[in-house]
Image (cartoon, rainbow, N blue to C red; front, side, top):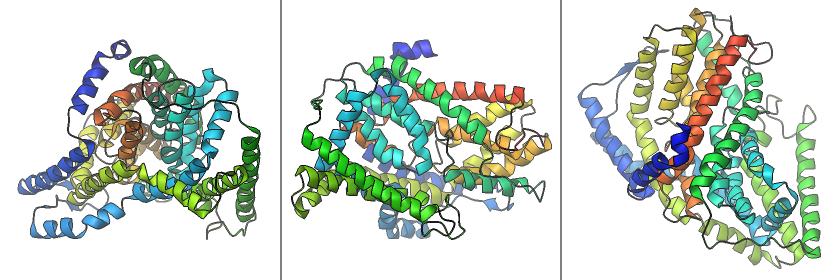
Length: 501
């Protein structure tokens, strides 16, 4: 498979087919219209499924009915403005715009590029992408575009850098050294499913921590190898018009960096004062840090940190002379998102219609029932579960929504076989991660297209999928091998968590 990929013929075919499709915005519009008609057909043939927990019959909702048409018309604006990634991206870009407009980001990149070993640059980007997951969506809105600029600064193709970062941020979603907001969410769903069999069973957020730590280094190494051996040779030399200045930092710029650094330290000090004391003002109502505004409000902190540092740098260097200069930086950053905003409008309608129709939920239940019907051994069942999760991820973007459906089916199955709910959860997380980078249902997929179009105006869905497909295949193989070895050696998945009941 990898020999074929290295020859690029298959990937080039995928890209040609994908990019032969209409503009991504048009494509999402067609997807949305298709869901309307599919919901009608599914309703007509009475395609339904039994919910594994409530035993409720899940029926398709006909969106071409009178009620459906009314909902489509009345909630069109809400679908757009309520699309979660849109607000996150806009707020983050306002802060980044202040930093970029002042020249701070350019100075930081030059300092990084001039001082960092270039041989480690790819690994650092993939590794940083994985670690960024603990802070929610910061990797998508900050690290990925930054990776393009960094690679361009060292004379390499910017899309290669963005692919490496994207592979870490999205493909490495189930690997990390730090627990994130998704861990307690999945653990809670796993616990409820486990209590179908054992009413007192508890699943902790640290359930998969050991496996996640090991996965972090595996995914970073594999992502680096794919980038250097497949993606970079295929994309070749960048011949665009963008150029980055790699001159040494001036005395004025070094002064600006010091002032910006002091500003960042000041904000971080406020955060520490707010979370270190047990009754700190930034702790959550339940006294925890994981559910606090520091973790859940990471985009707001990005705005404050980037904006504050950018303003401090701009004032210190003389780039910002008044408030109009600051607002101009923010305006310029939002202007670059114009194509993304158009694309998001149609993507938001498609995602909303798919959710309303219940088609994704029915597909997930049917797929799970089909898999359970096979009478195979543990390892084949684990691999098939990974494949099922990866496939469903192409149709349902939310990890928690998928696990809410799959956990009540597979956790009891594995428990009756003598295996822990934590094992079921880690297998699901592998499948959920490997296809994130090629799934149009992934919330930030449209944003990645917009980022890449900065350097390749002809880029479309085919470009993204063909570029990221090698990562999906490599991550799947590496993670399955790790999983098989883990099970074979009977290594604990997390603190006090056995593979067996």
